[in-house]
Length: 152
Image 1: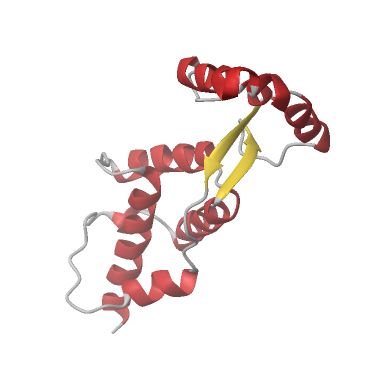
Image 2: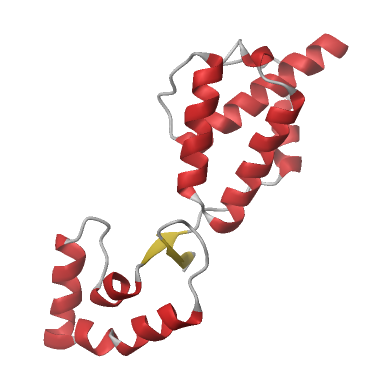
């Protein structure tokens, strides 16, 4: 179903949290699932009772993007960069962005991705009107494309 149970910080919950979610499942099923429907509807993060007690959330996992796919996409001809000032970033910073994108694809750490996007936008002195993953992906793509053109 491409979903995963994680703690608020994106880390793997301990086994006790899974047991607590499982123990509280009958409460969610009262009145033909009415308790779960109500708790999902009224909670900020759309959590059922078991998730609230265990401090977890269920998140949808998106398809993974490999670094090879990123490089193949970057190397396409007739590319117009979205962020022309990516030269303000170092290769080490680009490597950190790539690793963070890779970690996000693996464990879905939204907070880490968001923090990095904010820091990169401050360095580039730009604002992104897309979601964080796409912004960082485009920054890497622009950086790679600009550096590829300089060495050729």
